[in-house]
Image 1 (cartoon, rainbow, N blue to C red):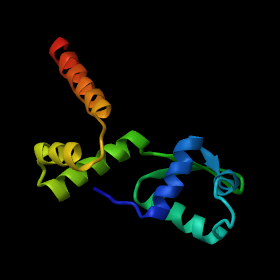
Image 2: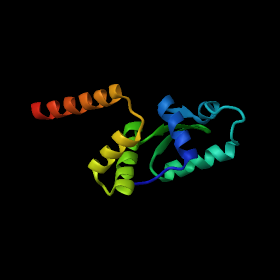
Image 3: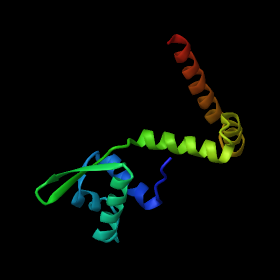
Length: 125
């Protein structure tokens, strides 16, 4: 799994939000003080090299689009966490998540309902 730096993830969050953007639109998403133009260009080049972003050229401008969806990235990221920190055991991950994360009884019930719904959908298929 290719991991992104926090700065690269930030660019991706902006691109996912915008769906496509010219450099000026992307830079405008950053709060003040905005990073230097060269910094954002470097991040975009790294994301292109990693296969996360593509672009089309219009004259002197480039329009950037994400090649990896937010859900695809998040799914890979979670799978990597389960692999790296829980020995690829969904049971260990589930146990940790339900015991160590401060979930209310209501949250646990909602989680159970989601799982029950997924199990029912798979039976129906």
